[in-house]
Amino acid sequence: MNRFMGFTRRNILIYFKDKSSIIFSMITPIIVFLLYVLFLKGTFVNGLNNAAAPIKDFIKAGDIDSLANGFLLAGILGSSLITVPYNCLITIVNDRERKVDYDILSTPLSRVEIILSYFAGAAACAFIMSAVILTVGLTALSLSGEMYLTGKVIAMLYLTALLGSLSSTAIFMIVVMFFKTNASVGAFMGIISAAAGFIIGAFIPLSEFSKGVQNFCFLFPATAVTILLRRNILSGVLSNIDTTLNGLDGGLFKQTVEEAFDFKFKFMGNLLSEAGTCYYILGVTLLAVIAIGVIYPKVYKRK
Image (cartoon, rainbow, N blue to C red; front, side, top):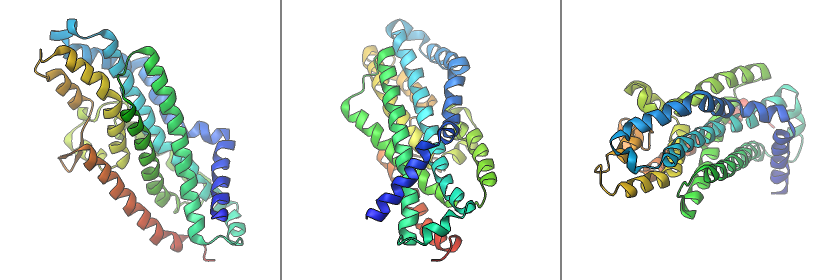
């Protein structure tokens, strides 16, 4: 256990000591934030105001802003849960390219301990970064407007971030194991950075895309994780608006926002409950872990 913890700590420190790695892993979340500030917030707020036009006198402007800001936070969190674990796992490729893997294999560490240490280190980095972003984001949202979040919902947000860290790490580890150079792994990082925001619906709600594109995006656990984050972040303020309206619109505004902002995960066209969405993420994660166990011995040097 000491060997495992020591090597895991080494992998975590490599990420946090490399400032450029941290910056590159946050490129997509930064882009989401900048686009939101420059363009997207106005679009979201206008869309919400149009949806609430018949009942706008009964809804506080601050609640509309809170809905838009919550959508932003979910997008930043969802994208960071993709890019951070991937950047942490690049350590595997660095070790291989610099022949550090020969030194690692000469230690008492077994191959199982080695791969689990890489996995645990990347998942830990992803959770730490997402927890920091979530804490800062919730603090900022509470200062800018009431979000009506309970302690249970906040705890669920951190648990969802942990689940997202594990699932993304498991999936990307399969990908990273096939790369042998930093050039190739960096090129793939560019593709991920460009596509992540669209796949999880951080830039544009998935409801704006065609059914075929939506079904493709829903295949990714990161999309399901982002939906869970968005649902929990926005549930409080949306429920408060619905309570304030007191049935004036028959719940239409709440229903419209839930559909437009993708509050529900759809697998093969079937709506899944919150528990069903968690089971889907866990199932894909388990399959990825099994795949790692099968692939790793074939692509890593035998001891």
